[in-house]
Image: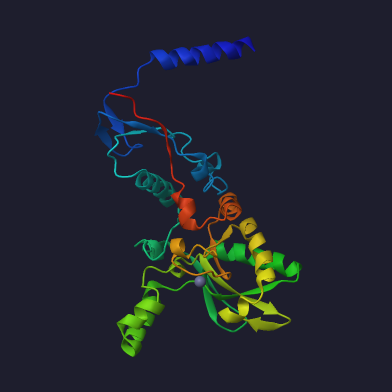
Length: 293
Ligand SMILES: [Zn+2]
């Protein structure tokens, strides 16, 4: 007990006496800046849970445990960019894709995505080929089995669509219906979450009959509720929430689920009723204000 008190006193003294270092500040290890003002940035815990339950040790104890304090000037471009680049470095090294990739009407699929993506292609009950990112498919299979054990039967309607395939659809529509119509009804190539291989459209099998038309599927809200309850257990989230059209750019789609891999993060997102945009927007906060000069 006494030891503890002395430790606290020592820390307080050190805090008061040891000056904050002046000079060039690092942006987390990549570049140095000569800064008059600076901030101390700690990535908050929220962000770390994205990666804590992945299966490589660097993230198991929370990423950035070694470099959780960053010095950089106020005019540094953005904390988000810094975070993204740090994450990307680690994921690239480990051969992982970024399961939190954000692709929407404003955010394009990363250029190197399709080179890195590993997929499996399966046939659904309708006999169509469906291509899914490999880890997302494993997780989906477990989700499907779990649901079946409770008498809920789902199938994959569609999953990955390549940018090239989307371009072909776009071109066909433009020729047939003109640009105006195409813009309204077809996702711009490169800007559809389905490019990632992580977005899955489910359909229902009810009393042995396939229910895959959107207007029919929405007739089963209580079945979707049970499905949504289980998503996070397998690293999935519901992507296009009711009432969040202005954020996602899409109306409510109970069938469109998105793999993020981390069950902790998926649970957080589902519990908070967040869209992926909102979750990723809960960004690192500056927890130490810049000192007066
Ligand atoms: Zn979809």
